[in-house]
Image 1: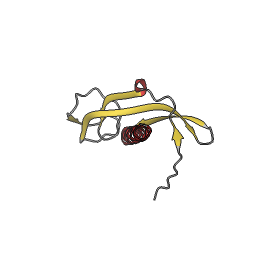
Image 2: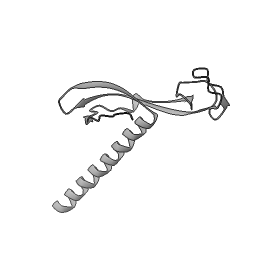
Image 3: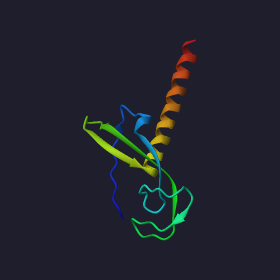
Image 4: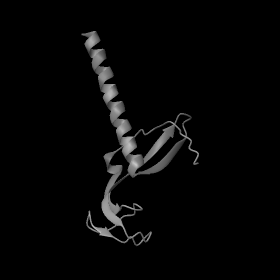
Length: 105
C-alpha cells in the first residue's frame, strides 16, 4: 500500500493566470491535438481506448508552516481538490465576516 504524508501550506499569490485548461489524453493526461470527445490510440502509452478530454493544471508557489517555500504543478484531481478547498474556505470566511457584521450592528 502506498504511504502518503500531508503538509499544510498556504498559496499566498494564487492567480487565474496560473490555471491552464487544455485538451489531453483521458488515459495519461498528456496534451493532444485530437478534437475533444474523439476516441483514438494514445501515442504516449499505446492505449487503444483513449478519449480526448478537457484537462486542468494549476501551477503555484506555496509556503508551509515552517516558512519553507516550494513550487508545484497540480494536475486534474489534485487541482480540482485545491479549487474545492479554496471555495469552501472562502465561503466560510464570508459567513464569518457576515456574522461579525450582524453582531456589531
